[in-house]
Length: 157
Image (cartoon, rainbow, N blue to C red; front, side, top):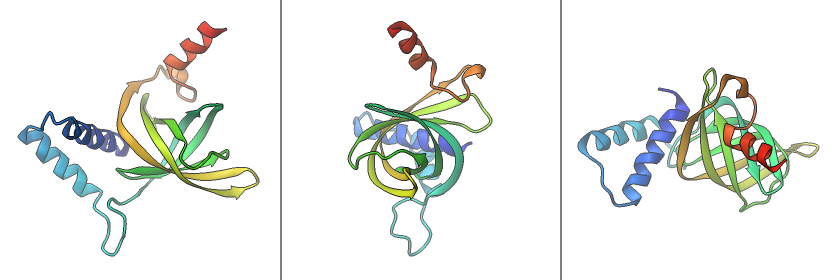
């Protein structure tokens, strides 16, 4: 199972718990297994370990509509590279593309920090919010925005 899919499944199970709908025994076992995969090493202050991920993402918020790279990811957040400046506290949408597939995951996130790496190029740390939406892109859209975005822009033109 891919890293993005593991995170999506874990966050979906967390969301189900938060909605107080309850988990069945199989879902409880799955959640425990998934959380164990992200257990931090000893002496790490994080609740969940970060895992390197070389994947592309499309990031949107207000006027921002840019491509970025996912540097690493955990159950609670991710670090994005090749980003323009974005304010701390901003809510953004991240469409993470599963490497080598047509699968993508749409995450909502809050910007927690940013650091300038080069002239107007930033790394950004985000906290993931809620459960992501998984969808499949058409092969012609592997590097661009999702179908809904393209349809919306075409309708607005």
